[in-house]
Image (cartoon, rainbow over all chains, first blue to last red; front, side):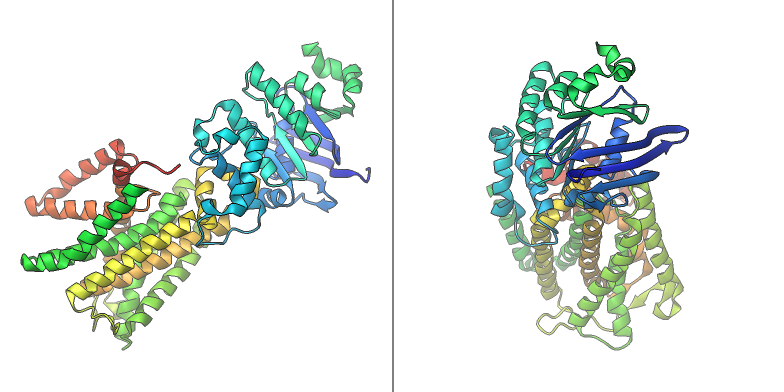
Length: 250
Length: 309
């Protein structure tokens, strides 16, 4: 294990009945890199991300984040330690404005919320950073719109904005391009391209164009096992990967 | 926003002038009725905090009405008549029971939550029936009403204004809570729990706190209700009573400031009107309630106001 690993996963296993969805995975994320996870449908990508984020309990193995064993921590604790995630299926607060969505994430990072009196929507220490982040992701003009009324692409951006608002040390992005049209996808790739310079990112994505443009390293997951990890050109050249996965595309 | 302030101003002004007008018209009964409505409105406001804003469908909220009322009755039974003590004990005991019930039930969801809260309240109901010392099934008459010093609860009109003031305090307090940081966590978690957890909120302590605050507030309503009826029975904790309070919230408009108050007035005034008209009034009320839920999904408050962004 290199010292610069911010996330180190060792021998992670998770079964659903007879199905080994995660089968002894070793996985490292280096500080500052964008590490993509690819794999065919049903390879166990979302199960793996779920265990990293704390939504699923692994059956065995260890997850070390920033030098601390977080294997047994619940999702909210991990989030407060700087592990932020976006969901494959859009997960926002539809009845709240875009600004309120992000402000809640700012609030979550600002410590406990056992404050019962002051009006949180007039709290500048929440609203100012939230506004700034919305502008950063290009939703500044939509701040007061109900999140439910945003377009699908905008909702995906909002989700990333909420992840950013928690000031994460590691971003877990689960198919941020899911359900997007070609044009929206290109815009999102451009946006993620700006993020990768500032954040450490684990990116699960089907869109190979996005993966090869954004990733510093790629890990290939097939039937719950990581069959290869390496730079994009190594992965492209790896014969095992070609047969197992890229073969379908190439 | 402006229409809300106007609405509240008119509503409160009406409630302030109501007693002298009713007495001048020779209708003291309606002072009692409106007082009873306002007491139950406090209970509905408290339920709205957890049901409307927190998404916790408690089907046992009448427990705290019973606890509050019995606090008054039992303290009086042992010769304690200080009203402030009554109110404090009613709220504290309700908060403690809410803490115990909430600690267990908030770990569950959906239908299980409904059933567990109902089961706990049924337990208290049967406890009330079984304790013969405090009247058991027959209930108990208050030896004396709460003695508050400033306000004479035996005077129907003074009691009325006390209840009005406390109801407004409950409304303002709840309004502040649901717009605070705490309240936003509660509402956001109702909207999307997975999202809340993913940004770092553990829902449990927030929900439990809201549950306890709602219990305490409803306990105060119970203490007032005991004084209002002057007679306490386990029936205060019946599931029908819980259902009535829940209905006030749903009819009035969940997660709105004025909703539970409007719901309490609408339900109980309509009930009074229909029952004066026919003894089979429930046959009419039932279907009307169902229709109102189908057609006014945001309740009476939803007809009067546009939703918050």
